[in-house]
Length: 303
Image (tube, rainbow, N blue to C red; front, top):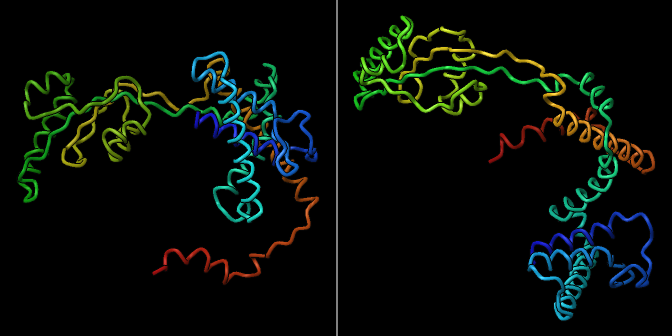
């Protein structure tokens, strides 16, 4: 109930904040009027239904509905008091909620449109870079763990020598199982099967392994290289180059991008209109190089 109540409270507040018409001090279409500000009956009814569904009941008792209404009135009183104190402008969280509510109202109408396939295909053709699939690499990996004497170099040298022998075996065509059977000190670090983006290899094996994997062709084997507490050897099995998939393969993604772009464009037009109608003065930062440089450099030199 608390979660649903918070959502309903924000919805009612946003309704009053971004509504285009003036507040009417009347109960017509409202469940309450607080200092001339109506609270939407429709939003309150949705609140009641949501709570009833959460409690798995068809009807909420009158006492419960009255308590919910009293709570929303209390929230409205607190909201109005906070606005009177200027919190909407000066308190970061309140300011962010109000701005986000206005953005949602502006972009929501623009995004609530069902594009045709022709619209989506035209958008896909104009923006192929937005749907690029990164290259993927299939690799095998073996590791020789540096022993406890690694600090003085002895363990490091032994691990490197073991990894060098493993690399030679892989280059000769041996399988991972054969190499591990012949060289018991070799380990196979866990790595997801199948073609992987370089970022996944980086997460599992580290940045050096990801960089080496990017340059591997099928059948190629790296020389041993140090990665954390091991020497690794990679063998490439397959690679898929970066590509733009066909429209049919990314149709859902194209639609999401089309909708998002439409909302962004609507917001940009709305902001342009607000700027055109506003009395606006802005400092010329280019004419104040000292102040601009100070603003950028202050965090690094702060004590």
